[in-house]
Amino acid sequence: MNPVDPVEKTSVFSSRQWLFVLARVYLGITFFFSDHGNAQPNELAGFLKFALKNGYGWYQNLLNAVVVSHSSTFGALVVIAEIYVGIALVLGFTTRVAGSVALFLLFNYTCAKGALPWGPGIDQSDIILAVIILFSDAGRIFGIDKLLVNRFPKLWIW
Image 1: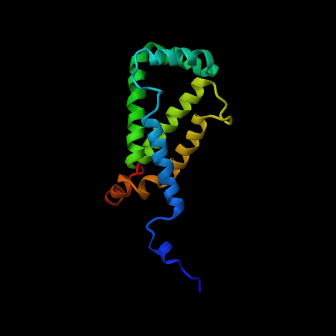
Image 2 (image 1 turned 90 degrees about the vertical axis):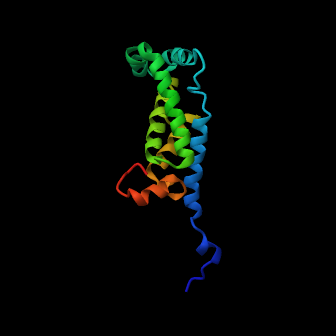
Image 3 (image 1 turned 60 degrees about the vertical axis):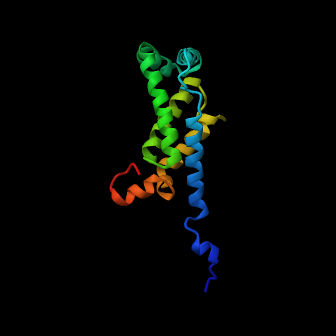
């Protein structure tokens, strides 16, 4: 017979589950306070100039073909996406969608910087956190998703 620690038995969540919540909230805070798209004048123009100089060749071609001619639209989309990801991850609301959007944004930042995917960097480590959040139940552990999954159990976005 295994003795059961009464504190562990009454604990609502295991310590491993809280690590998912911590990762989710941390990534949400970093997106909410990121400087990638804080709507400063000429910020996107400066970032595009940097990306066109340092980014991967195929990514530079994509930027020239699509983003440069519609830079104001893409600038607004980046700001909206980062605010959404920040709020959604902190609150645990539509966590999997927010994790997917975070992955998309982080992948673009890495490509724009021309950074090695396996090299050191904040975007690379945040990509790992976003993958963990995407494939875990980080929103269902402690967040609004926990409330919504009972009402709409078949939706994958929780």
